[in-house]
Image 1 (cartoon, rainbow, N blue to C red):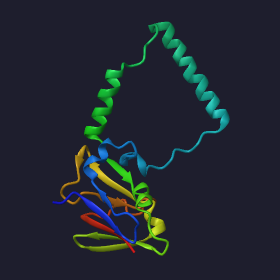
Image 2: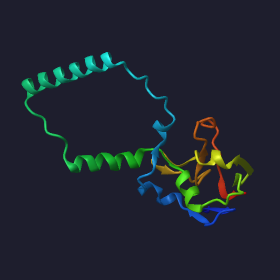
Image 3: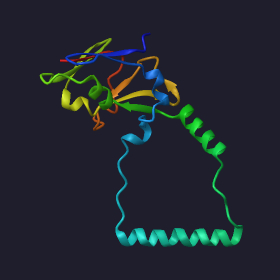
Image 4: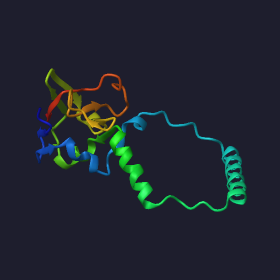
Length: 168
């Protein structure tokens, strides 16, 4: 299977995407949390009450147990490593599309897969998320990426088996 995806067509620069290296990219997003509904925002009075409860609990603990120092850097690194090994991640497509610099007359993005083509308006393409890892493993069976719309409308049925991207 070829894990490299080429972004070509009406662009100033042809871009080669390699999802295998995105795990090291700081722009990656956690797919488990990305489409979650934002929590309802508490009122200012509720926030203040919650803050008082937290401070009270903190001081009670300090009095009973003594000071607790923050975790060491080694512990934090281990947590991040475990998160990478077990997490599901995606990459926003917008930076790559901007770097390719689509021509002014370009109006759509064609996603070529093993099973056909999917055409979307270029404006909507900037919101795409390319999932590249699920539960710490690359998407090798039907990948190398799963493409999700930014609004999550295809969350249950992402575009899979992606081979090439063409701007027209």
